[in-house]
Length: 258
Ligand code: HEC
Ligand code: HEC
Ligand code: HEC
Ligand code: HEC
Ligand code: HEC
Ligand code: HEC
Ligand code: HEC
Image (cartoon, rainbow, N blue to C red; front, side, top):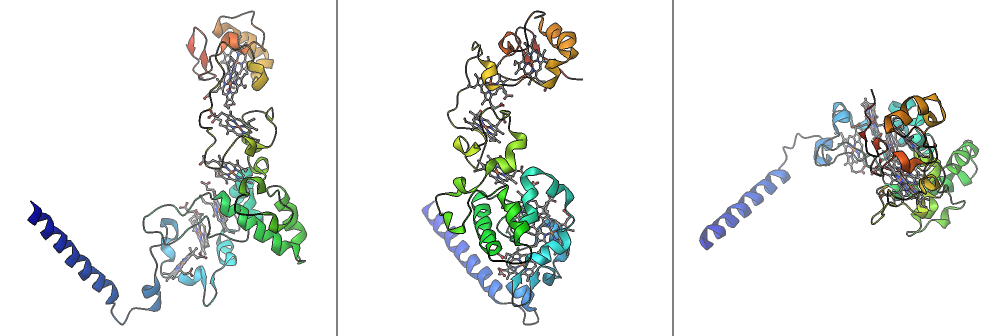
């Protein structure tokens, strides 16, 4: 048994050495591009594999101008609140990582990188140039700091204005204010250890707002009838709703939309 393990370790070592040698032994006809190729391009960019200079400026590196030359027309991206910042950002590679070893989509939402890019954009825009007023204006919607040096390693959450990018999906209807960072982290909206009040609570309206349909005829025609609570008022959510899901109706079960 022991000997077998020793043998396989040896074989692996020899094989690794051989493949390493292969890596270093490149045919001399290879172009510089092949020699410095750090990894494959992402699937959607794979068609550019023989056109490195569409992204890389010789002697400069990847330029934003090259990215935006192909991506300027991103209406959907600019029309969504959390990604609208693309209109004023001048760095791309922190979140869109190319040449990765696996075939991942070249996308990570990195809020720490976002804050740093924001601070650098602020520094550039503060020095007067043609676009600076417009850039400063659009930074205002999502960056809370006014001077670049206000950002340090520990203050990412304070530097970003969460509501500027996320309040259109605020499930609390502004009842908890607009300082999302007071309660939320950057990785997930779930709050570890949070326990929802009991379904026996009668305080539901403190934290929840009824949907518009509850102020329309729909409420008496459908909601009250389905729940079998013809006399429950709109603000008595607890009469009809469980806390598991808004479609989980007390003593009736799930309401199915059609
Ligand atoms: C779709 C755009 C795109 C294409 C096409 C592309 N690259 Fe890149 N490449 C990048 C990005 C983004 C980085 C990361 C650069 C950074 O961090 O600023 C990078 C990094 C590199 C690096 C690491 C050094 C550096 O400049 O940071 C090398 C080397 C490189 N690419 C070579 C190539 C070669 C060779 C090709 C053609 C086969 C190629 N790239 C095609 C986007 C691209
Ligand atoms: C020569 C044109 C061209 C250049 C240069 C280019 N792209 Fe693309 N990119 C495309 C095309 C085409 C697609 C696929 C269609 C689409 O998603 O719009 C794409 C897709 C993407 C996607 C979506 C990837 C996915 O898997 O969903 C991202 C993100 C992206 N590009 C970012 C960049 C960044 C950042 C740069 C600069 C480093 C860049 N692109 C340079 C043409 C280009
Ligand atoms: C702070 C991180 C960050 C930076 C910096 C950033 N992006 Fe993005 N980008 C994102 C996120 C997040 C999405 C949304 C992805 C989604 O919808 O799943 C996105 C989406 C995109 C898409 C659409 C991808 C698709 O699915 O078709 C393109 C194109 C794109 N970015 C290009 C750029 C370019 C060009 C730059 C630089 C000018 C840039 N991005 C800078 C985070 C970033
Ligand atoms: C400039 C815009 C911007 C700002 C400012 C911003 N975010 Fe985000 N955030 C995004 C984008 C883009 C995504 C990716 C998801 C998407 O496209 O909807 C995201 C995703 C998230 C997610 C979901 C992560 C996941 O994978 O489910 C959380 C949680 C989050 N942000 C919290 C915050 C908090 C808290 C703040 C303030 C400290 C903040 N964000 C500031 C743009 C922003
Ligand atoms: C006073 C604290 C507080 C504030 C401020 C707050 N939230 Fe929340 N939020 C919560 C709690 C508690 C939950 C439930 C967490 C859980 O279930 O793990 C939650 C849940 C969420 C969820 C997940 C909902 C779901 O069911 O998927 C989102 C999205 C969210 N909050 C967005 C926001 C946004 C955007 C802001 C700022 C505009 C914000 N929150 C401000 C406390 C807060
Ligand atoms: C102290 C504040 C608070 C009170 C009181 C409260 N809730 Fe919630 N509830 C939350 C938060 C925060 C969330 C998570 C964010 C969201 O989805 O709105 C939530 C989520 C929910 C959900 C969504 C569950 C899901 O995952 O889809 C339901 C249903 C719900 N509450 C019902 C009730 C009912 C019924 C009552 C009264 C018996 C009640 N809540 C009382 C704060 C509260
Ligand atoms: C008389 C019973 C009753 C009362 C009281 C009631 N609801 Fe409902 N609600 C329902 C029923 C039944 C449904 C599902 C069918 C429907 O849309 O009418 C529903 C649906 C909902 C939905 C999902 C609707 C959608 O458009 O996605 C939400 C959210 C909701 N109620 C919140 C509340 C809140 C918050 C309160 C208290 C302020 C409340 N409801 C009071 C019976 C009630």
